[in-house]
Amino acid sequence: MPAASLSSLETLGDQFALNAPTERKRMLVIVNPYATTVSDRLRNLVVYALQGRYDVTAIDTEARDHATALTREAAGEGYDVVVAFGGDGTVNEAANGLRGSSTPLTCLPGGSTNVYARMLGIPNDIVDATEQLLRIADDWRPSEVHMAVVNERRFLFSSGLGLDASVVARVDAHPHLKARFGPYYFAYCGFGEFLGKYVARPPRLETITDGGAPVPGVTVLVQKGEPYTYFRRIPIHAAHGAELTDTTLAGVVLRSTRPTVMPGVMYRLFSAKAKLERHRQVDGFSGSRDVVVRSVDGRPVPLHVDGDYIGDVTEARYAVDERPLLVVS
Image (tube, rainbow, N blue to C red):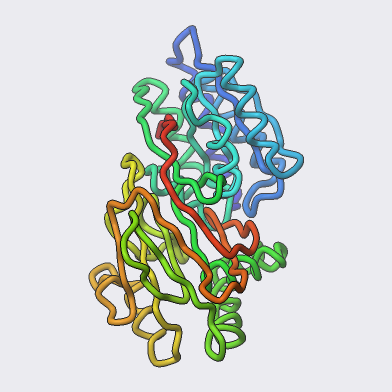
């Protein structure tokens, strides 16, 4: 991070502390020290700045699901807010610990993509995002959203089976390359997975929404919000009609990954106007409460949630978590 940005963080806390109220909200900052853009110095400067408006405690995560355990403890101890400082995986874990509680979640961008932070309207620049959190202390308006769930695993904004999840699995296997090359490494892995597995012998899937007729396909994307993800600053649009505040799901079923099909699919994913659902090889759904995706031939298919590969499955059952999550941004 440029020295000028770090200097800005150093002065933020002092500026906001001048008119700070006597009683400050208790804030727990959960830091993933291995996130793409997080460093010890940045962590310390962010915490110092936030102390201009909040009573801050900061804890580093030490293992998978540690953030979930920490947020459950924070909710039980009556913290006013929890900040997930890391990537979307850290935010997902933190949300899982806070769902159904009266302690709201917010986040700071520390990963390579930071999809959920952007969905909440939080800037992708750490200085701007920190300043926004300082400002909302005087205009505190928590709102209620809902998470989705697949095979008992909850997620915040997106999940996929097939090609998309295969790419995530390949990227997650090389975290150092993911950190160094970011979205370009995703693109490289995407071409590799497509040419290696999805041209000659793609999986055979069927998707059933709300008990309807099965829809055949080779890849399924399920969303709880929009957009599906980002490529640097460019939003990637898949399904439409998904809202964080809703209790329904939206998604798309890709029927084919033939080389003649994929250029049109990729164009629509990056386009702000040309909807993917209108492609001749894509079926879309929205307003769904129950979505089941099965492997027709019994071959296990990669599954991801919020950009984290969670394993291969032969069936994925989607629904919306009834217990709400409070967020503030």
